[in-house]
Image 1: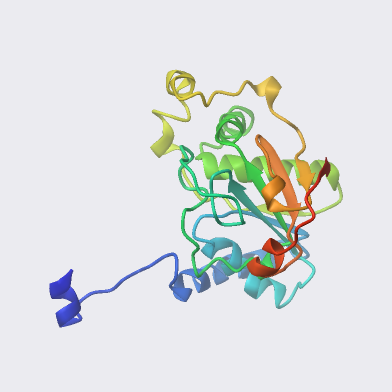
Image 2 (image 1 turned 45 degrees about the vertical axis):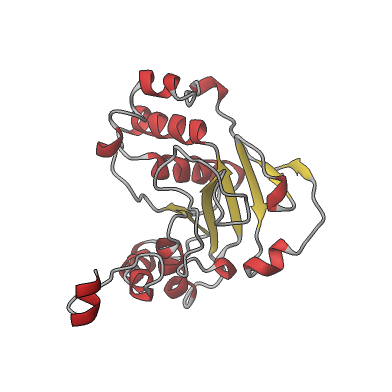
Length: 228
C-alpha cells in the first residue's frame, strides 16, 4: 500500500465515503420516475448508506413527498444504537459512513437477525425470490407499510442475492446452532414504535426519524415505547 501511495497508481473505491458511490444510483431514481411515478415510500437497507441516499436525492428533486425508510439491525451504530457483535451480514455497520445522509430519512426500522433471516426464507417460499437477508429485512418492513397503508405505492431496494447464504441463512442446522432460528408463526407483523433510538428492542422497533441530522435526534432525551 505504501508503494501505491508513493506512485499514486491506485484507485480507492471507498463505498462508505466516496460520493460517486452514492451518485451511481441516480439511474434507479430515473427508472422509478419513468415507470413508477409518485412513489410514496422507498424502503432501503442501510450499510454504507449509498443506495438509500443515492436514489432519494435525485428522486425527491421531482417528488419531494416520497418517504425514505431505512432498515438497520441491532448492535449497529448507524442510527444511534451501541455497537456490538452481529451475525447479520450486509446490514448495519460499526462505523459511520459519510454516504449515510441522516437528514434524508423519515423512518428507521431495526430488525433482529432471526427476524431478518426468517423474512428472507419466507420471501423465497412465497415468491420464489432467492435473496439475502438485507433484502429479506427490507421486504418485511415494506410489507408492513403496505399493510398499514394499502393505497400507498411502496418500493423496496433489493441489495443482495441468496447465493452467499445457502450454508447459513437457508440452513436450519446453522440457524439453530447460532440461536438465530425464528419460526414463521413467531414473526411479528408490525413493529413497536419508539420515540428515541435508545428505546429500540428486538425483534423489531421503528422510529420516526423526521429527516433530521444525527446529532439533533440523539440530543432528544424523552424515551418511551408505544404500539405502531
